[in-house]
Amino acid sequence: MHASISPLSISNPPYSTLRPHSSSRLCGLRTEAFGFRSPPQFRNHGVRAVSAKANSRRLSVSSASNSAAGNGSSAPASFDYDLVIIGAGVGGHGAALHAVEKGLKTAIIEGDVMGGTCVNRGCVPSKALLAVSGRMRELQDEHHLKALGLQVAAAGYDRQAVADHANNLASKIRGNLTNSLKALGVDILTGFGTIVGLQKVKYGKIGSSDNVVTAKDIIIATGSVPFVPRGIEVDGKTVITSDHALKLEFVPDWIAIVGSGYIGLEFSDVYTALGSEVTFIEAMDQLMPGFDPEIGKLAQRVLINPRKIDYHTGVFATKITPAKDGKPVTIELIDAKTKEPKDTLEVDAALIATGRAPFTKGLGLENINVETQRGFVPVDERMRVIDADGNLIPHLYCIGDANGKLMLAHTASAQGISVVEQLTGNDHVLNHLSIPAACFTHPEISMVGLTEPQAREKAESQGFEISIAKTSFKANTKALAENEGEGLAKLIYRPDTGEILGVHIFGMHAADLIHEASNAIALGTRVQDIKFAVHAHPTLSEVLDELYKSAKVNSHNTKQVSEPVAV
Image 1 (tube, rainbow, N blue to C red):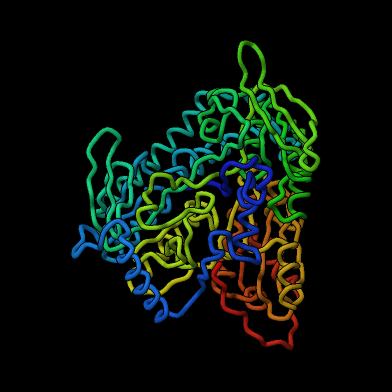
Image 2 (spheres, rainbow, N blue to C red):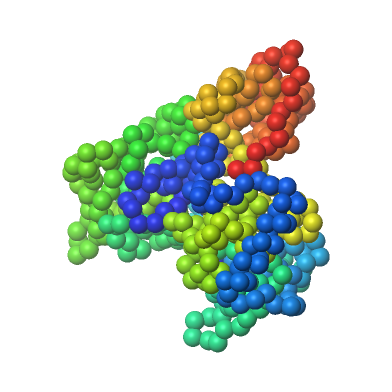
């Protein structure tokens, strides 16, 4: 099963027609999870946040109706486990560890390899490759080295050794995850999990007999797979997805990357550092459409323009044919608006970075009257699964990429922990607005909360004003000592209450710096309070210190920040 590295979903339409769910790791899902209307899987179900008493009443009604409808079978009288988790990616693993901590007898079903996408085909190996690209950039930047008084001979690399570094890291983390589950007494059940009825799951390998287990509660955590639009032929060699690219079987002289979101940006960083020329193909009118526009423009100036990268925006790749018989990869482009033919590219390789699609086929959801929407399992704000009639399925939850709320590995883990809290008597609703995201380019990009356009739209609809504060890395002592002054931090907040609506950072170690802001949003900390926090000097954290101090909040106002809204 799979955990996720990046957002975005989708079924059959061309990737560009569904751009809010495509190649940027956050793009469309930012619009939905951070936006101003319910995600599509929530609509037409009439599901809303209700009191614990109302929740209990509704569950009882749903349970009775399900039994009457014969959803697979009646609930068992006793159970093999307190909790069974289908999928052993980051989300399933996080839920299992927390369940054991809470005293639940737990089993996890894994049909592929432990760790899911994140560990095996996503976050982990990609960071190994990006570590290499970062070192290469440092060694290749003669101007930077000279400014520090360093002289280094020409840098080179061993492709296979780089690939081995990524594979070895994934193997190590995968082993750590397996050992941690075994040490805590979690039963690891091997095979593909299918729900056969209320509180019943069967599992087994293809060609072997199935086993059936019962559980008081079940969590679906099956993750996602790369989304490949129609008309694109993936051969795994010259036309590839991120799954193939992470193996680094070869470094092409010229590679086209379809999609300029998180996945595409990170791989452009890797390939250009290793000597490739890159061409981005982007359906939207600008690159990096999922980022805050101001941050995106700065990132383009630093990450795109000076490098061997060109791009085509406002176009769809309607057909991509792999290289064959000495012929290159061919890519046919059409205008995104007029649908008229635009251009044909011939390149050495093409990477399809158009996002990810939920992996939910074969789960047996039809046995309990659940209909997926574009592959996503519909859930409420507590991750409880909703059936086709709008009722909550008792004792069934779905976390991570499979529910489509926010397709990030750490979101899946947080959702899993939230579900376990509910199972053990602590009502918990995760505030998705407080979940940070990062793009591990050089320099890095990170963010939490709303972009400026999203914040302005929300402010207009709800009748309040927003303010913007900014600080530059050029004013930070540590950044200057590293000769890494290129960077910007941006705060979006309410001047009437001091509520933090969003923080966006582009610069050195931005992925590490964002957590102070995400924790502030999660805890409801106001700007006027956090500006008194003390930061060590000289550190990069002082970028945020200056950011908070530069914000201007109405001093006469004492209105408290509202409770976080479940999204």
